[in-house]
Image (cartoon, rainbow, N blue to C red; front, side):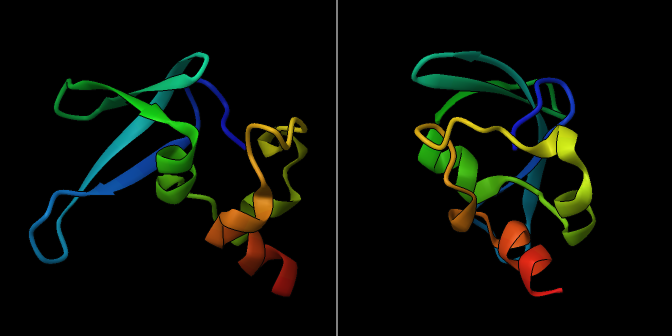
Length: 87
């Protein structure tokens, strides 16, 4: 579900309805690096990454979006994946 250089994330900036958007850039276990549009590169662990992945119901049907090592990602923790299952 996390494709390096392609998967997008949105993290709350703390203020109401404000988000920082970025792209999953790299993985060095147990960290993923997210590059934000403002140039920041932030290391995040899988739980934080899963919570911020932008995964739409359309992505559910794209096999390139799946990561089959459920030790890293459990798709039932990604809201967009669940929405795809229900569509």
